[in-house]
Length: 174
Image 1 (cartoon, helix red, strand yellow):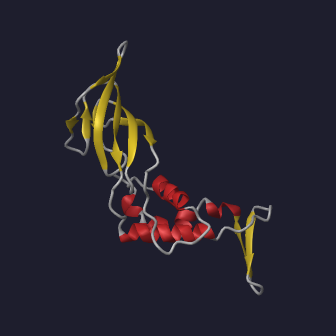
Image 2 (image 1 turned 90 degrees about the vertical axis):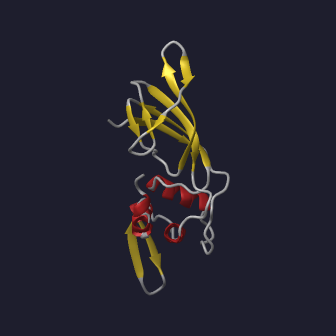
Image 3 (image 1 turned 180 degrees about the vertical axis):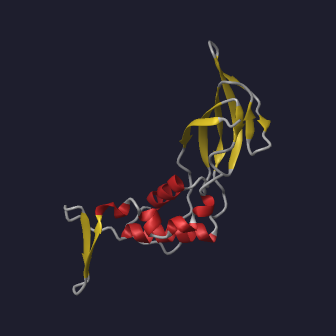
């Protein structure tokens, strides 16, 4: 049986890696937020609190993850410290039919691998190409001789249209 993660709260990491050669005018944090929304992998340590319902095996929804504390909700008594046993399928086993609050640290302290850095650069460069919306659902660019338009939703599809999503495919599941 698999335990269900109900909610995850992530703190902002103190330090995030920014690959060299990124475009100006784009927030490095904004690029990382898009990447982190797309993947389960994290770079830059941050505190994470997650709530899960047992019983069952719980797989960490963010990687790498290091458990600090575990608490179980006891009716009429509130949160009580508990010890969780390792699971043969990944992280831990939640033994009872209850809600658990788990606190730990997620995120690697090392620099991201080369494919993640390349994905960051592709996404950042793509985001830097933002042009003014013409008000008719399209953005337009021109170099004088050639003009093309794109749907306004192109920014929402930046992860895929930039090619970053393909490079991050290996980091989508824990």
